[in-house]
Image (cartoon, rainbow, N blue to C red; front, side, top):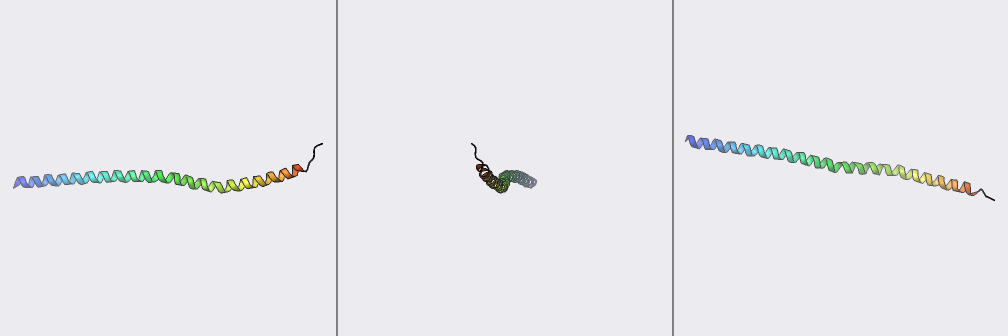
Length: 81
């Protein structure tokens, strides 16, 4: 009878160890998923920042083009002999 109870206790200890191993592996997997999520979100943030910079750059280029055309018209009025 004592041997049977000892076997049961050993079996329960084994189950407890298995549960601890599964818990540890799950925690490691969760950390890995968090790292992947972070790595994937960084490029997305960069794309959003770059997209936000495109609009002012386009506006500045358009204004510069208009000023260059105006300057070309003004300079075109002069004649060299």
